[in-house]
Image (tube, rainbow, N blue to C red; front, side, top):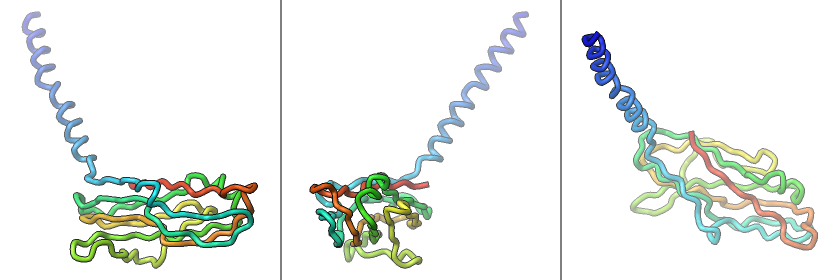
Length: 166
């Protein structure tokens, strides 16, 4: 009886560290060296839409992405999160999405996306792109156009953005 108890305790002590080590390895493997930071509200794009206005969008920054610690190409998806609100206030809203890569000698340069220009509208409210690793990026709105139905005498709603990866 004593021999079975000792063998059982020995087996428990020898096998118990494996799940902890496995969980630790799994956590390290899923730790992607990537950071996404939203810009300050003062740097975001501006839409001046009063009444029944047709106009353009003043360019602005949306997100900074630091993928300098990873060599993997990563897919990103940019969403307009308040499209349901925008549809009631605009006939159309087309935005030109800019992707810039940071270079040490020249600063921010427009990155070639391979697919040409990237647009996001209030009707599709989503666009996707792939960013190579080992770089820092800036996601912007470089311009766009809109037609506003009118916001009841006040400002029309501005789009809100959300960026995901994976």
